[in-house]
Length: 257
Image 1 (cartoon, rainbow, N blue to C red):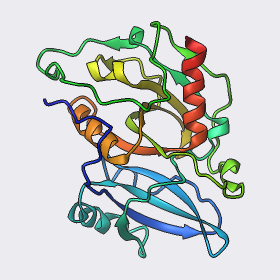
Image 2 (image 1 turned 90 degrees about the vertical axis):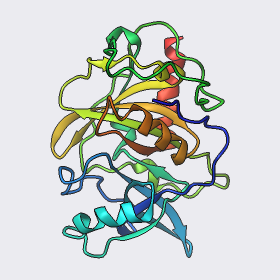
Image 3 (image 1 turned 135 degrees about the vertical axis):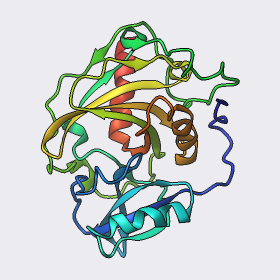
């Protein structure tokens, strides 16, 4: 298995999404076809059009328009007006309520060693982290005590007026979702170069814990890493993270130093 390219030189490739619905109000990220598609994520974008706040619900990411077309036949059973477009680039988020989500920073203390048959080859130069992200230290798990998000309670942080200068958009690789705490994690070398963390929320009415790897400055870079780890995480996908999620995850890293 070859190491994914560095996250510092965009190659001009474009990713696609399926737009499910648009509204002047933020919508829940819960969709009825979760079990019909594998390896994709649902997220929300926010924009200002003609002076008004506007939200869209997206399904992504697809490496080409034909791949998106394949999924569109499934999606249109539930969203007849869904359409395909290039992936949006800013004001994106993949959690309904970031403020009430429980975050955890993971270390190798909870990892298992990958068997020789499934282990990736020793990687070449590592994909770069976001410059402002400090290295992950000591083998301990840290947590922020907070309540579980309750769908469809929506992130009120998204309802603020548009800032003059938008913060950079960040992305993460969504490795898996589980109804139980995730403790059996392959020990992949690439994990040492990023921040491995958990988010705990309610999904479809049940508590779920998600395992995420971040952070990336483009969806394309995250997509390459997702493909790299797919042998160990078949349902892997890419998610955009809000500035609030990014800040909280980085705060965990600072606390663990």
